[in-house]
Length: 227
Image 1 (cartoon, one colour):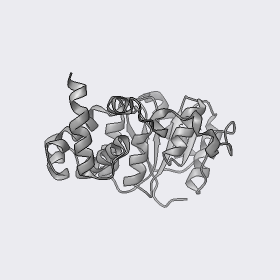
Image 2: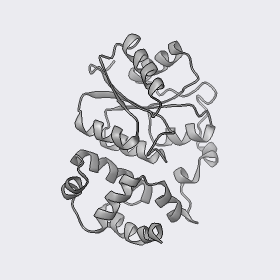
Image 3: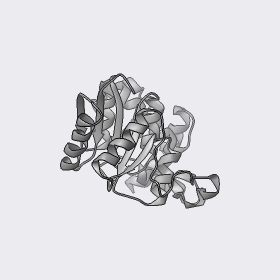
């Protein structure tokens, strides 16, 4: 199990954060729990701390409009265990999260012991998925994934902009205006590491490979949000 004993919980339900934090401390021996209520706040905490070994995200909280954001977190923090803990048991949500590269999908409906067992398995290197879908996420099932994950050209651009968080739109606007990551961080009062995560999320959402392509895509898409 990881030497670091710091975990982050990102969920806008305060009581659930408390309950999950108790499980992490009492059953999995974490010594510090960082609680956040939104995706942007979670990204900022991750950029500030290098000792977080586990991050648990709800899919239904402010800022979390797409699992693309979790894929970006994985890109920037490759050693971090990223887990979805969600009330959703929809097959499409589970498959989308797996496609984003998360380390596990834990339903909120599980009992405390089962949650601890699932997270413990993830910390030991397993990829946990609910029993209802374990071993069944084959390529032939990709048709069940939402279009935001699989990609489809018709109407994709409009949907992409809608899936960006307000903070990601701010970052994209400044990128289009030619500002560097350091300048964007200064203007938005964010850490440079936080900006890098938002930038990685933008690259995935826009399906581009670099800043130049992202800026070009942003120049086309941003006027759509202002009209």
